[in-house]
Image (cartoon, rainbow, N blue to C red; front, side, top):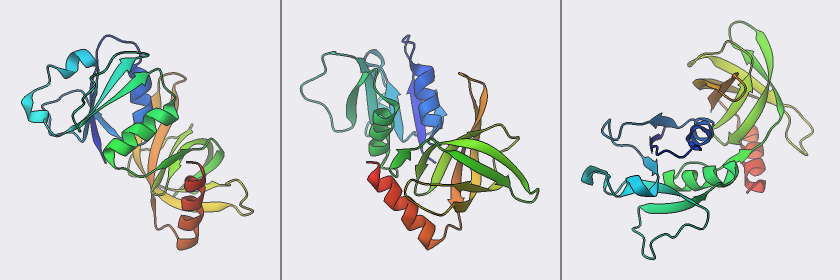
Length: 202
């Protein structure tokens, strides 16, 4: 799991950024001294006061629309204008973290809790070849094993894959339960179908 350090300023969009990053199972921290993060996201004013110890760590600097940025930028610094779509923001962070491509896909899914045979209906948020983010009104917790069932466009049969819940949180916008899960024991056929689906969504 990748660790992202958010060094917030006074601008109001940081809750949106946190929710977007949590949807792709990123581990968020606000403490630059607590270990070495994989990515730092901050504003232009904070950038100049970062300690020398973060040299070499990728930094995503969020600026306003039309803001002037340096003509010559270090290789580890990338600027992005806000507001920007969730898809564009996650694509940028994924590229900077070298993590797998994801496809935003909202669909009705079933979540069956292993060992209890309890099935809930939820909604997917996005998929990667290794996992899925979803919302469901269910008492899941980190470490639970579930079977997730869903249909993909132009695929005649239902796909069922096992997954382990790796993140459990709450979306403050609607108080819904929000989870991230990694696929386990996925078959070759399902992996190919999911890979093709994600590739077509680029």
